[in-house]
Amino acid sequence: MAAPKGIRYIPAIDGLRAIAVIAVILYHLGFKWIPGGFLGVDLFFVISGYVITRLLLDSIQRSGGLDLRGFYAGRIRRLVPPLLFMLVITAIFVGVWAPDSMRRFLTDAPFAMTGLMNWWLVFKHQDYFESFGRPPLLQHTWSLGVEAQYYLVWPLILLFVLKVFGKKVIPTAALAIATFSGIALFLASVRADISSTQDVSHVYFGTDTHSIGLFLGSALAVSWIPQNLRVNIEKRAQDFIDFIGVFGLIG
Image 1 (cartoon, rainbow, N blue to C red):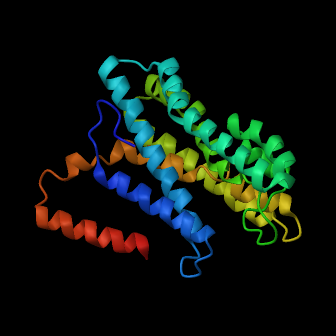
Image 2 (cartoon, rainbow, N blue to C red; image 1 turned 90 degrees about the vertical axis):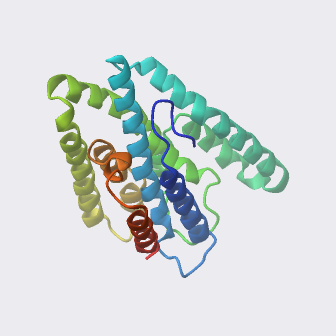
Image 3 (cartoon, rainbow, N blue to C red; image 1 turned 60 degrees about the vertical axis):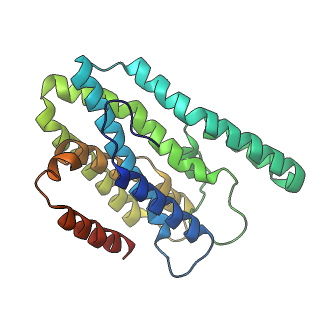
């Protein structure tokens, strides 16, 4: 995804996105040498939180306010067309090669379209790590649901924090929400019973338990701006830091 207008393009972000996507794909293909590949979703969440918050702050700085209607319309234009395309292709595939899955597909599709798939999976007691049988064909849209809910709520929180407390408090607010999510994750994990897939599904699919990355990225968007940090760093040092960072990420 290209950088939004007004925000300087950071090539490394696209590189991190690629690493995150590849890690998740390799994990689902069953490569045993990348058992933590599913964590690529969390890396993607951090990136999304960073980019969206930079976009929101840039809009506020340039215009003195935030056009919520324009922001939400932009998110819809970016997300809905490819989602519809995926649903159509999947429906064709199911109709031709997996008609036995059509009922579940038609049941899940409205939740995928409305950004509520993650909570639907919690309600259905779906275990992300279950290795028996074929998972629901639209299960992967759970992460889109978490992001959609973040897109809906975070701009409102951001405007409130800016109006009442000022920009300096944004990282604290974002970290506070991330901490709350971490506590929710911990409590849900402790509560989870091995025999209860409901608790297990909530641990992984719940917005309250899996939004840490999004708000960590939001906090970074205020306190970490790469183009400012690179001004006084030599090119050789930048390359070395990038090299170490890539290997650290892979490790």
